[in-house]
Length: 83
Image (cartoon, rainbow, N blue to C red; front, side):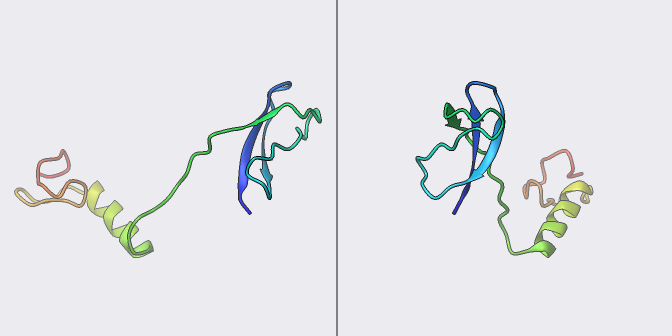
């Protein structure tokens, strides 16, 4: 069951709600109005293997590489962190 974000048209309150039906718009918890609409939610995801990959790539992209080599940020040797 996904959690969706909603906004009340009447009072402007933004809230999250666990819903069973994607088309359902629950009433506002603040003013109890039925005049609510679904908001576009931001998503967050990570690609790669795991925490070690994340730590390695963030460390590599923040530290300058030696001249002529590439870093994890661009893999081409032409970005501002590559020497």
